[in-house]
Length: 159
Image (tube, rainbow, N blue to C red):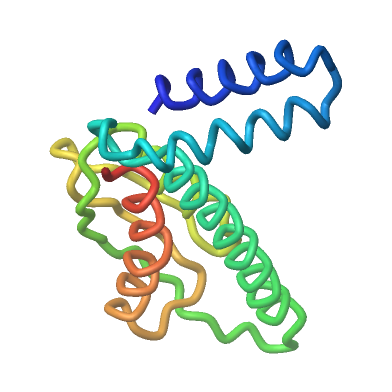
């Protein structure tokens, strides 16, 4: 992946020298030409194209902002109710993530989302213990996290 990015920048810089124009427009045109060349020659690269991972990272960021907004509204509605009717719960969520950075990212995304916090990661790094401020169904909460954050992280990290 790093080789693809460097190759793309190299093509952009060569394009700038060929046109004797050193401005942002020429660089962007050269970058797009390099991207097209990399897409055409994708069978020569052992890993998937870096653009796919970049797009998956953008989708993960947008998913986080969506979940952040929804959970903020949910916690706000809990706070402004005159009667506090919540069901706080600690539950164990098994994870399919393998790498330390993936588990750290998942834990951070869960913790940054209002109303939830990761309390502990098991020693074998296969289970996250999560506290949530209001849980009606544990299986639904686990499915929601696995189907959103964990799936998006796997799209970013897996080839």
